[in-house]
Length: 82
Image 1 (cartoon, helix red, strand yellow):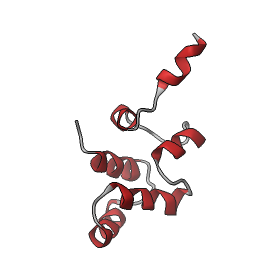
Image 2: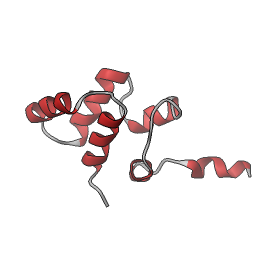
Image 3: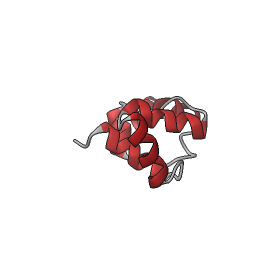
Image 4: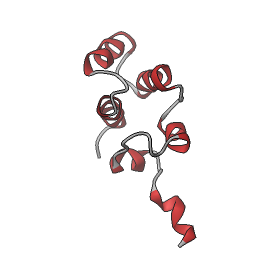
């Protein structure tokens, strides 16, 4: 399984929340960890982390299956309606 930090990095860059250079600058100063990457999401989007972003704007961003799985989010929640 891919490290959570790498999944978050890809999420941020792929969704153009921040550029790779911006993420590199922040993580070089504050460390390459979940907290720092969530701080970037907070600064740019106003959401504290991926689960909050998923709850509020699931269609506004591209979420990989691996990232959703890491946070135990996804389509399973809506299967009760079937």
